[in-house]
Length: 321
Image (cartoon, rainbow, N blue to C red; front, side, top):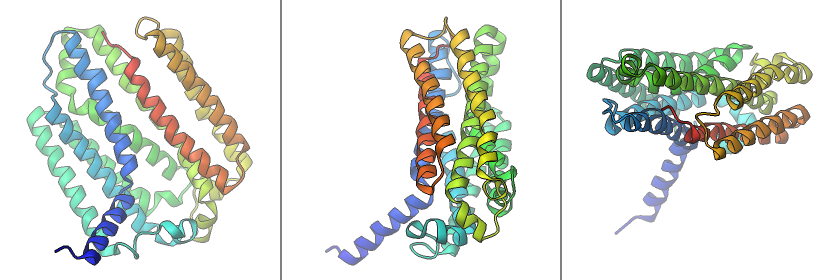
């Protein structure tokens, strides 16, 4: 016979853990990595009638590594942000309520250890030794961000933007043996594939840089109370809005460059999708310039998350061969 109280407690605890690890962000990251694997690696080798060493099981393990690193980073960040979150997000506070800080800390440690161990295992299998290096770098960035860098201008914003771009480079590092084969056998395909990886890496960095500033603006009151010295607390709103014009301009330039140079590698639907990305970029820029309240910054943050997903889905229309 089931005990209702225990069932409710278990369900509540599961919900708390899923919120703590930011499950929706992990799903988006996993989808992004799988699309890169499918569209830039698997389909490319299929079109060339070649067999890739990088297979579905390997990719699944690579996604699991990224998920563990991101989940651990989100847990540790919430542990360090209890004071500011108590003001900025009192109804969404988890540490100290649904989950104790000690329990969260133990899970963070185990997730990082498992991710590191699995990355070395995959590196041994594929000789992709850049993989554990990137995993260790990602864990270090998340730790330093939560401990120190989120309270300092520039460092926090740049570190998170860098981390998000690393989720794409991790795929390239895991598939380095296959990319080396393309370089030796199909140099033109290799150059296009690498250029796609680098293009999306740059897009991820710029979009996340902008989103981190919007998130800081959303939480600026609570961050000031705990003495955080991020960009939102040290710069006034007018200067911050002027600052983001540069990354927005770089994104627009990147999209225009693709529009002008990908005529041989995009379908008509791909061009329409790219135009949609251009219009979305301009719309979010205008919304960013007009935002002045916490509610408006929260809306901009959500728009930017959807915008990054829109950018990732663009890879479906690309061809490498």
